[in-house]
Image 1 (tube, one colour):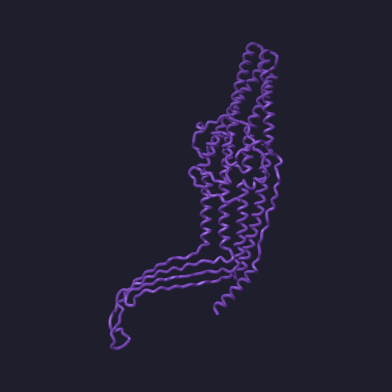
Image 2 (cartoon, one colour):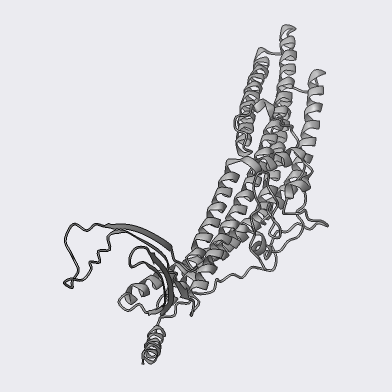
Length: 487
C-alpha cells in the first residue's frame, strides 16, 4: 500500500510538473560578410598570438612581457580569474551530497540520598548509584537524485561562467599588451618630433645669426631680423613642449608596464618609427574564434540558457535520499552498545511556491534575451572595429608614401631657398615660407608614422591578436589558466 501510494503521488507530481512553462530564447542573429571591405593583400601574415615578437623590436617585447608579468592590470585580471575558479567550485559543490558527522559525549552521576527506593517491600534496593557515560556517533547524509537534469545544468552553468571569466582574463591581457605598444610608439613619435624640433631650432638660430650680421652690415632690415628672432623663440618653445610631452609619455609607459616609480631617464626612447608590417588577408569569421570579448559573450549566452533550464526544472519534483547511521555506547548499570540504521527518501513538489518560481523563470528568460542581444552587439562591435581599423591602416600606408615624398621635396625647396638667400637670389619671405612648409610637412610625417604604428596595433587588437585560443602561455609568477574547449 505505501509503495502504491508513493507511485500515485509521483505520477501526480510529474503531471503537475509537466505543466511547467517552456522558456526558450531566440538564437542570435549574426551574419558576417564573407570578407572585409578593406583588406591588405600580402604574401605573409604575422602570428597574431604574440604579434609583438614578429616586429623584431626588443624594447617592445621586454616592455610587454614586463607588463604582463607584474602590471596592476595583469595582476587584477589574475585575481579575478582566481575568484571565478573559486565560484565555479562553490557552485558545483552545491550539487554534491551533504551531511555532517556528529559526535556527542555525556557523563552523569547519580547519588542515593536515603531510604529504600525499591518499589517492592522487603526487596533489595537497586539504586543505580554512580557514574553513567554515554557516547554517540551519528552520520546523516542527504543527496538529491538528479532525475530531470537540474544539478547537471547547475554544473554546466558554473563551467560556462568560469569560461567567460577566462576569456575576460585574456581580453584584459590582450588590451594591456596593445596599450603598452601604443604608448611606446607614441613616445617614440614625440621623441622623433623633439629631435626634429631641435634641428629646426639649430637652423633658426643659424638664420637669425646671419640676419644679425646682415643688419650690422646694412644688408638686411631690422624687421627681417626680428622675424627670424621670433622663429628662434617659437622653436625653443616647441622644443620645451615636446620635451615635457615625451617625459609624460615615458611616465605613462612606465606605469602601464608595472614600473611606475622608475625614473623616466632610465627609459631610453629612440625615434624609431618603421612602417607598420603587413597584416595579410583575413576574413570576418576569424572574429568569432579570436576575439575574447565575443567568446566571453557567447559563454555568457550559454550560461543564461542553462540558467533558464535551472529555473524551469525547479518546478519539477525533487527526490532526496537521506540514509543515516547512529552508534551509541553507554556505561553503567544498564550500559551497552547499540547501532541504529535508517534509510529515508522524500519527494518534494513546489506547490505554494509555484507562482514565485514562475515569475523567477520569466526574469531569467528576460535576462537570457538580453544575453542574446549582448552577443549580437559584441559581434557587431567587433566587426565594426576590425573594418574601421583595417580601413584606417590602409589609408595610413598611402599617406605615408605621399607625405614622405612631400617631405623630401619640401626639404629640397628649403635647401635651395637657403642657398639662394645666402647669395642674394632669394628674399627672406620666400626663405621663411619654404622653411615653414618643410617643418610642417616633416612634423605631419612624424605624427603619421607614430599614428600608423598605433593603428597597426589597433588592427591587430581588433582581430583578436595578443592571446592564444589554442594554448595558454605561462606568465612569469602566474599559474596556467585553463582555456575551455573552443571546438
